[in-house]
Length: 183
Image: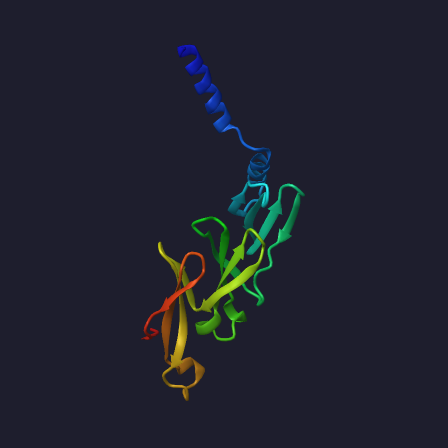
């Protein structure tokens, strides 16, 4: 009886350690990424079977079943660089913060953008834009210019107020803070 328990334990541990063929392909692809590339998300289920990664300020999706790499299009406007990437707690959404730099119309209102890519249907949605975007433990905070205090002054001499716009970790609006002066 003791021998059967030992054999059963060994068999169960071997089964748990074994990877699916899709998971093995994703893992192998991650190991062969170019120098400077960063893995963002791995999906080993039969529907998605892909690896998301960044390289040279672009987001890519590599499908391990078709062996095809595609540039993930998410920004309707041009951007200078990807500032950060992260996943929603359930792993279904990939969030990307882009910095538009001098491509922005007015950096205090649209210098950075937060985008959400749904890994299940590949649709992208712009969550918001502002001059600073951060992720906290509970939410995303987008700081955005709200009101000019001296509109007749030259652009460099203008003083502005801002509001912090809060979004949950799936990209839905929570609330906006009271306005405060930008320093």
